[in-house]
Image (spheres, rainbow, N blue to C red):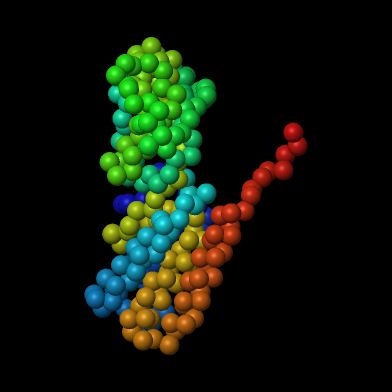
Length: 224
């Protein structure tokens, strides 16, 4: 079953399956999942809603990637859900955080560090999105890896498409309101259904509320 985060993670309320999301969207236009064409359209519309979610970098939709360093290797393949970097931390042999590598735009990294033929201590990194690689300014030497065998990279996520009825998006459950209303609006537009105006308004309201919530600054208000 495809999931957006590790199985050990969870949200309350629990995320719905693709089958349940399609059912909710079809209910707006009195459609049934026995109609294979309408059911397929509902699924495409749900994935189109996910595409719109992925068009924005959400501050609260993040993931963590542990990179096992290899001596003399400066390139590491990005996870499939990788969108934008947040921070890259060094981990000691005891898996303790001990400093970070600084980010540079790809052109800046290649311009300022054009030579990486000799291994040593990497200080900077960048990402090559098209070839799906994280690039260090220089390959790590074996002596560096002895102290820092792994890196911990926090990044903003992309949400994968849902393909099987049991799939779940596994992001904050409030996104489902937007996904369902977007899919319902698509179905209503295709059918010329009178509910179109209502679900379009619901879709845009859900979108605005998601952005407002994501932009809120959260704190535990603890005293320093």
